[in-house]
Amino acid sequence: MALFTSLAEKAKLASRTLALTDAEQRSRALRLQAEISEGGFETVLAANREDCAAARAAGLDAVRLGIMRLSENDRVSLSDTMSRIAERKDLLGQCICENQIADDLHLTRCMVPIGVVALLFEARPSVAWESFALCLRNADVLILRPSRYIARTMEALTAIFRKRLRESGLTEDAVLLASGGSYADSYELFRMERFVDVGIVRGGYETLEAMKREATVPLAVCGPGNCHVYIDDSADYGMAERILINSKAERPLACNATETLLVHEAWAERYLARLLAALRERGIRFVGDEKAQRYGVAELAEEKDWAREFFAPCLAVGIVADLTEAIEHINRYRTPHTECILTETEENAQRFFREVEANALAHNASSRLIDGGVFGFGSEVGISTGKLPWGGPIAARQLVQEKFFLRGHGNIR
Image (cartoon, rainbow, N blue to C red; front, side):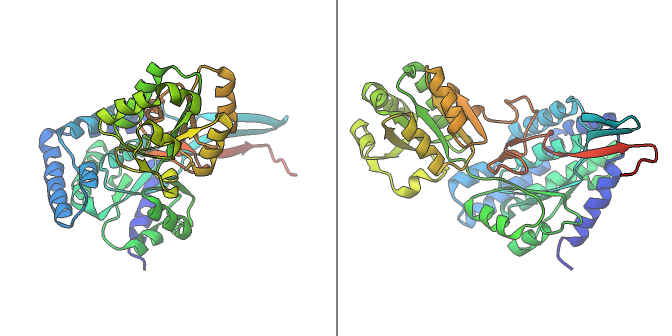
């Protein structure tokens, strides 16, 4: 028997129990999760300090250490997330369409729980509580499969979640931790179609490619975001500077941070050197094409630089002749995640929206606004870089099944 078979079976049984709960029961459970005491969260912080020390000793780089490190502010973030999701309108039972097929034959399509969601994710602990809150809101069971680097953190955090579930009268198996084992065990978990209804993967290129090859359950991938900003000839300089600082300099490691800046050659002549200086003052370094070197980009970009998420305070800069060239570049190298155009020409914005292949598009707005919380969804599990089963932020609306209900009076075909 595979390592996680019994755990997945337990999850499926729990999902049937959880599906029978009503909205107020789950809201109360979420509010109780929000009341995590400082003493309770201290066990999570202590475990996290142990994880960070072990990861540092193992040679994990400073960037990833920063991602996995928790602080007291995260306790506040956890509580805020649970409280926010607790107050959201319940989706379950809502009908999204209905049709009177015949006088005595009526069809509806309504939202019900998906069942069991398995989440494979990197070393960012906040992913766990945001995903758990959204799944509990929808009466879905969540199986957490985290990076080995945060094993102690996740054991402590999951223990708190399960304790609060018991106290609220819900099954503690609404959240389960798949710990230990190898990559092969992760693959096996994502092949358990009888027990796992959907898989979500947050990770780097290698992890995503491996899981897409190995998984057989429906799979949503939240991969690296090679997000572009194209500055058109008519763009306002002040707006462009504000947006680029926000899109890249303020949180360069965010998945919705800008990785490539494409600039219309006429705009570059007027403003690019000034814009790059403003970004350089905020710690951003650049690689770029030969034309960009005229404006202060010292390092020549390689082909791979146009196609990747840097996950660093680095920005690729390219000069293009027009909107057509910008669109061609983006469609060639997109992930797709988020693509932005800065322009005062509405026709160009509309063309960009029609022709660029991406899950989210923005006009005169920061790439970092592409986020489930900003969109008013309460939170998100991640931002899907695939088209199916979902594209863009994965929130409560995505974590439901749309089921058909047909009511008749002895009808036959």
